[in-house]
Length: 327
Image 1: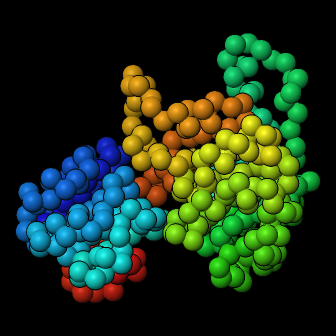
Image 2 (image 1 turned 30 degrees about the horizontal axis):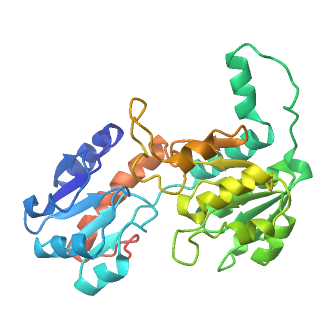
C-alpha cells in the first residue's frame, strides 16, 4: 500500500522517513494541501494522511472514494475538518492522532500566568527600555478560582498541574473523570461561569460546543474574567470576544487559536495584506495574547502525530485494531 501524506512540515519529514522504513511502506510527502483537483492524481487504492487546514466534506470524500481510497488519517486530535458521518456512510475509514497531553497542558498554564502577570505589556515596554511598573500589577493563582471545561486527557492534566498552585479548581464535562475529583470539583457549567476568575476550554469542536463562549455566556461570568483557549478557535465567537474586551467584561484573553484562522495558521504572512479585520483588531489589545496555534508543538507530539497517521492507516487497511479509529 502506498501512502500519500499532505501538509507535511519540515519538522515531520524525519519521522515520516523513520516510519516508512520501519513499516516497509512507500510514503509520498507533499507540503501542499490535498485539494479536490489533486485527488484524481492519487494512485488508485492508496491511503491518505492530512492535517487540519482543509475541509473534507461530501465532495472531497466522494472523490476519494471514486479513486479507491478507503483509509484516511488526520495527524491531529481534532477532526472537525472531516465529515465523519458521511465518511462512515460511504465506507471510508478515518482515524485521528493521539499524543501526550502534557505539552498542551503546560502551554495552557503558561498562558494563564502570562495573562495574570500582564506579560504582553511588560514585553512591549522592555523592548523600548521602559522599565516602569505602573499598570503591570498582577494577581496570584493561589487567590483565584479556575474553571476547566472538559476533563479529557488534556483538561485533566491541566487540573493536576494546576493543583500545585493552590488555587480552587472547578470543572465541567459531559462525563466525569474520577481521577480529577481529588483536585477539582465538578459543577454545572452555569456555576463554573459564575464563580471562576479564569476559564480554560478543553473540549472538541462539535455542533454543541460551537460558539459556546458568546454574548450570553459572557454575561454569566465575573467582570474581568480571564479566558484561555488552546483548543479550537470556533469555540469562541470572535465578535463577542471583541465586545467583551471593549466593555472590560473580559479582563484578559490567552488564545492559541482564533475563529477563522484556517487560512493563516502556520504560514509566514508578514509581507502579505492581512485581511481578517476582526482578528487583527482583537489581538492588538494590550490584554490579548495570541500565538501561532502551537500549544501542541513539541518534538514528542510531532513524532506521535506522524506515527499515529501512518500506523493508523496500516492498521485500518489490514483490518486490525486501530486505537484512534473514528469510523
